[in-house]
Length: 246
Image 1 (cartoon, one colour):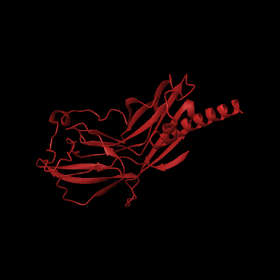
Image 2: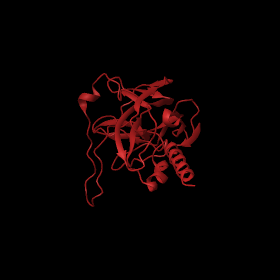
Image 3: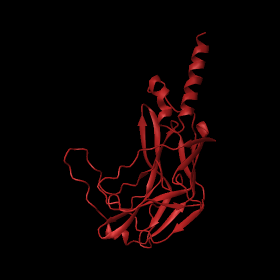
Image 4: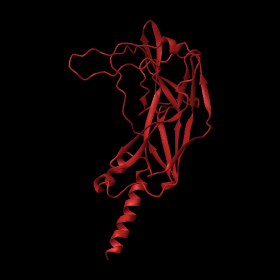
């Protein structure tokens, strides 16, 4: 396993009336200033797939007064937020995973320990702020019908939310949400860890030489979690090509 501190886009919180200090919600009853960090482990299995695990010690609870209520904006270091306007802005992080050409893909989520925290009113996601000079700040919006629903949001802690093709290489976008929420009961379901696997079947290569540039292959590790597998495939092809012409 390779251990990394995750990195992601930061979420800029603008125009909100945050009137109290951050409170740490500990998952292990040993609060400290670093407890809202996430640690990522992964095992790149090449054409067989990839195993990923996140571990969490706790979260920051930012208290926000809006719409005559006190809301919690829960924060995990280097995580972004779910962005469905009016629905709970829960911490979220996206991973990009390369897919072999023609592969069948499956997602497996491992069971995890869940801690339940009660009486939390989660701050809703707002429309994105614009960078235009003089533009007004996003208005407070809340989906009242959703907040009165007895549901769990999001439905799963890990979901494949999109697929794309970059320079001839197929990619998955996998979203990790360690906190789930029941808005009617005001309960948070916090996963102390999130483990999942993306499995590939019927896979024999990641890319087509004719459609993928050498420059792209050299930088693919900058954004694909399993980019090392693509680099190894490219190195093997280069070695074979050199051997064939020697």
